[in-house]
Length: 455
Image 1: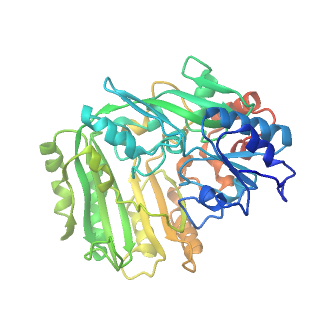
Image 2: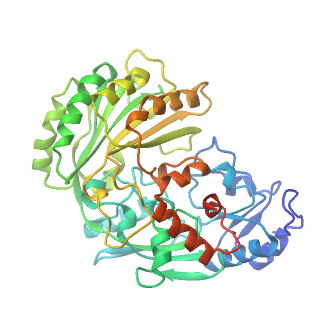
Image 3: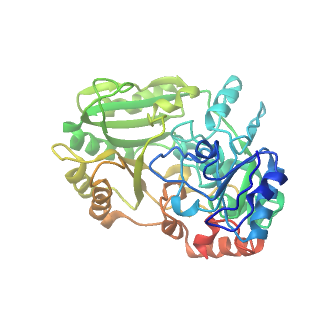
């Protein structure tokens, strides 16, 4: 492709970048531009001055150095599950083509920055191994892991970032570096929890766990029974050992293809459960929840790890979503009442999903090597997802957060941070100081867009 024009918004000759790289460079008006910049959340307008679909790590080196020469900023994107319009206005570098996947039977994996969890789940399964993947395996590994990585086995095994062995990254100064806990430990700390503040990850290596099967899935109740079921869930989960990870979610699913008829067009409550011990013990532990109220759909059973997506039942197709959330210091009955007053039976709510995850267990403990993840003390996480076109969805989400304000506290989960301004709230002062020091060291010219939010 010949890129002749200079961006109208930024005086950068993107034809120069095209000549320096193997991958595709596109600007608005080019045939491939829309396909390259399109995020999973189609409600967020991602319209950079130019986009590079990197072919390899050297393409990314050239892109970062080009940006420094011309005084523009760079934002990375892999799968596009967490875009922020304010951060993607200049040069967007997509890493979708970096698709290396190697699983070592002795218990670790190496992947390129464009790989999603599903590829590793399937490659590890024949060895009885599993990664600490997210609530849906369609999510990219790098963005998820650099934000900590809170998955459906978090109380047993901790965060995905705790399992990282090495990261290969093009830092903001245009250098390709291999980073471990002994090689540039300051950068190893900052990359695990700091999202894309320091550079663009090209590959990542991480440990797997021995988990060929699990006992779990989702158990669904009518929304009219939400108060009763959540009260039972609170008492039951209080005594849940670390072998169990659980969450609840209020759903209002549309009547459409792919939604089970008994769940469509009504308020329902899903209790999610993953037990990493024996199926017999898991079934015995979960019996109290099965008895909480009449069940309308029971998908909790012993399964191979390849069925892990059945726990959270997240949507696969691109969605115009509005998202909000925070972490909670507690979730007592008073908080439940406040939540149900805005989202429960008989209430007109524009939200598709309101989720509360129990944290604690291994999630609360630091990994073997310190990281920039500062949310360990949170007791629960709160996530609100609505359809962006529905009138009042943002105001209603804000009302939920206001109602739960007495129990909101601590540092946001980086992966549940939805505006640039919220990033500062994800870190304590010591972690912020370390991140800022790393940014000054590895991105002295402020080339990485995300790092600029901490300036």
